[in-house]
Length: 271
Image 1 (tube, helix red, strand yellow):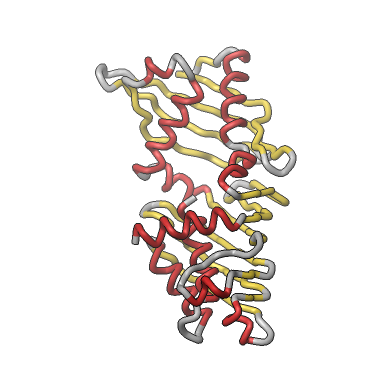
Image 2 (cartoon, helix red, strand yellow):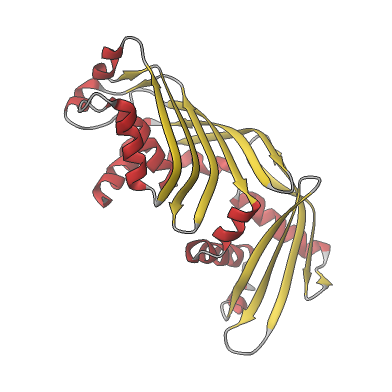
């Protein structure tokens, strides 16, 4: 979510009352708050140009490749195109950014298998993966607190299927369990990820279908974009595809003014 806020702050930075090269202002704002980015371009469409001083922008387009929100985590491609943006001109003159209406944007994202596997090795993703897995398992998770996940890997397969493999290693004993999860993927109602015909094996032994269904239910609930609504974001996946090399998706995102005001304030204070 912080990465989304960083991009949003850069886009809204174009209506800053300071400076005239607005596209460079937006690019510099985003670059400064990312770990790294290989290529980045921002284009602002506005006629007439003096609308910027009034807090109005017709459209903003962003295209970036090799985006690193954090060390070790890479997004192959990110494209964003907004509808018209309107901010409060009075607060703008005071150096504050406040949306007068929700911000609508189209987003295109591409993740490669190589980049995803590199991200799985990063400490921040490994910790989140462990916490997520413990949440899914409920009461048995207390037993797994003595274990850690080692060398997680993902493989994109044909037919919109993926294979995830990791090793569950005991922190007290010299014991390892190889866990392999394979499943198809589909998106329901543009917002909820669903696993199709999933299989799970532990050291070559398949789990019972009842236990697999329990785990699948937890994953679907956690990966539901409707969970973002309370934070002020509405998101819907419009198109997506998965092949042997990459995952790509196109989405519609609507951001409420309350999310912008709260999160941009926190981001500014943290910097």
